[in-house]
Image 1 (tube, rainbow, N blue to C red):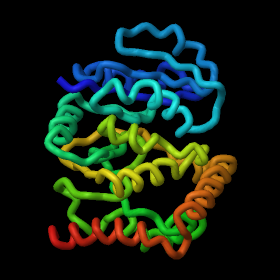
Image 2 (spheres, one colour; image 1 turned 60 degrees about the vertical axis):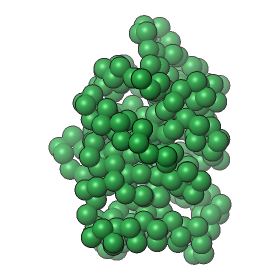
Image 3 (cartoon, rainbow, N blue to C red; image 1 turned 90 degrees about the vertical axis):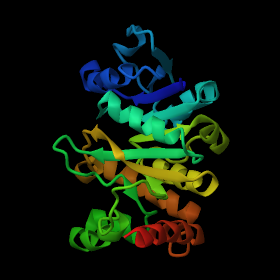
Image 4 (cartoon, rainbow, N blue to C red; image 1 turned 90 degrees about the horizontal axis):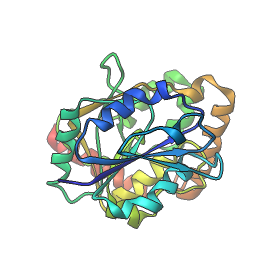
Length: 269
């Protein structure tokens, strides 16, 4: 049986917020450790008792990637798979087993199931690498963004079968542990937002990514940066850092990875 470790970063989360996620994870026999990484000072997590739970207290709230790296550096090499999981995920055990069984047949480093809302609608977790226009239009020009999203979110294609995708959403990233360790985890320059895009594309380049739509998980997602000015500022700051790192208008790696995905989808469709 595979050894699968999971890390969840918490920040002022109540137990009731995490219960659906924890219940889903605990029900999977191959998940042997669930690491609660506390970026604040939880009033319950330190004393939470479960045979699968390990509690880690970080030195402070230095970001989503920082928190997960805190667990990755200590535990990734002890497992076959390492799951980066948001605290607002739930799923049926059979769905997770389908994902693991598929990953066991593949050599790639990162896998993502279909991500849906509680009402069953698609969250489009499989995406192309964004251009500046994709991200900034979504914040400031919704009508223009709708047109861009047709390609960015791969809405025009049949995503009913496994396919290479360069950007897999960070709410439920299942890594081969050796790949995640080799990548060094997240780039901690991103405090919040864009760290999943950065890590996903690095994995796509070095090991390959696969979107696996034949399994699904529920993500009770709220787009905080659309509603909160502080989070919007954090999102824009991370976007600035991301495009400074990889390139704004010219990004040959982005073009190559996106084209690789689109060519496969075009041939399949």
